Image (cartoon, rainbow, N blue to C red; front, side, top):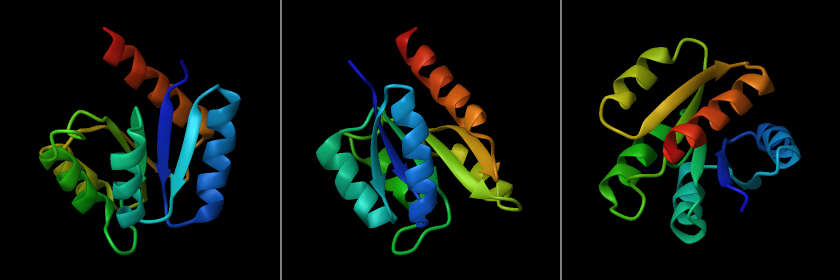
Length: 126
């Protein structure tokens, strides 16, 4: 069965590009444009992984992670965080108290993201 991945970014083009690559790798891709929409989709769709931008409107990535961690139904969903250069400190701080399993600095190569996703699912199966 294909793994379901939620891609969250306030730039629709980024969601579309990442989704295209994920679908080529036989993943099911769902998109959300902000943290509020993402939270709703996480609860309703129950993705196997979330690829999440930190800097977003309405509900930023860090706040969304905290909500996921506090909810027993979502606390075990792994998260890969994407962020622009210069925001690494926020990710390191966030990793200490949420389920962030990895991160990418924008811009990144798609093969980097795909490798990180593959590693997450391999570790989950161990």
